[in-house]
Image 1 (cartoon, rainbow, N blue to C red):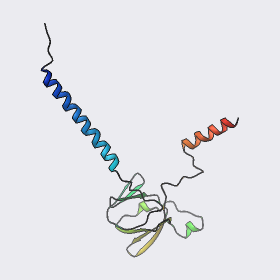
Image 2 (image 1 turned 60 degrees about the horizontal axis):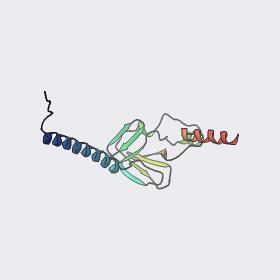
Image 3 (image 1 turned 90 degrees about the vertical axis):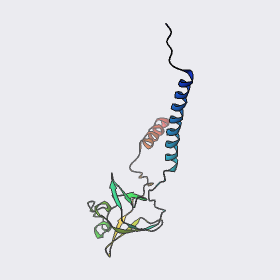
Image 4 (image 1 turned 30 degrees about the horizontal axis):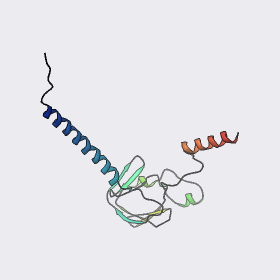
Length: 149
């Protein structure tokens, strides 16, 4: 008794179709990764935007689907200057629409809401706090201590 899996041409066509579909999805993933632009606002950036569409998700504010910044930007008031911070007032607490202005290489965000100007401390996503080490920093310190012994 002989078992045939089908016509050889049909099997090759199925294999070829599956390979084409896999390659199509692979190139779609590569293209979407390469096309993805960094929308995060950096300290060296300058903006002056009227924020109509504001989304807040997981600590990140997305403005007009084009700019992302930390929602935990602290409100700068007289208490902040004297060292008494009120951490409950952040940029995420304010709903739009409002105008947001940031000057180049400046850590202050100006938020203009109906003729009132509020000041917020800009949090740079590239800033690395030396008092808050990451795991690579921790491992590097451990290796240095081991090598010194």
